[in-house]
Length: 209
Image 1 (cartoon, rainbow, N blue to C red):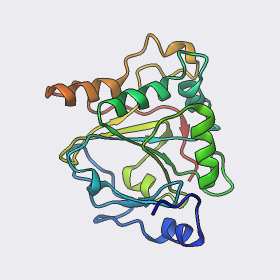
Image 2: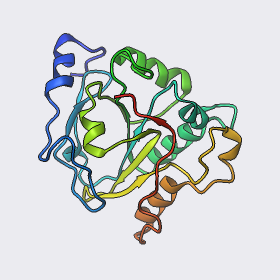
Image 3: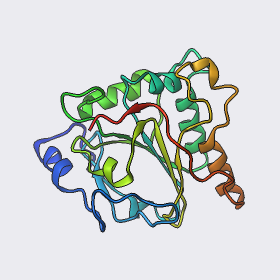
Image 4: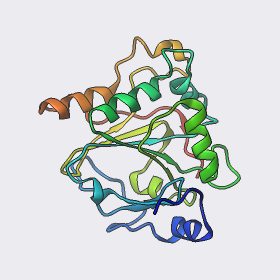
């Protein structure tokens, strides 16, 4: 049954049901399998990456108060870069998981209902928004910035991590001329060709652990 809002049980799950085979501080290297991971989303539903075996998965660290996140969600520029990426990914059967690792009381922290409202008002289209207020998922992946992007292939191996694109400015007008590394990685997976750029330095606001 789909839970429409975070219950007390869901909040407990967010703090205790995060299951990892390695340590929470480990950096996930490209090529590593990442299926042993369970986390709660904004509706209280638990997601395990193992459930997405056979599908490409994108992880997007986000913080709605960050100027760099606002850059990619600014709807004045072609309806929003991140929204367009999410919708194009969904059309190709890609699972897109937005992750909020902001701690309670820090910039970007939202409740489940708040996360759902952001998705609605921005016209975003992630598969789900994962809530990570204690920062275990973020630290496991060594997520440093918002945005910080990861691509996982159908074999559940990490194949890209880093910046969303090649322009580190916070100005939305720079999106059009930038190389989008996530788009390139997804296109390579779809065509069965090697990913040309598999790791870059992320840019944006620091994750507010």
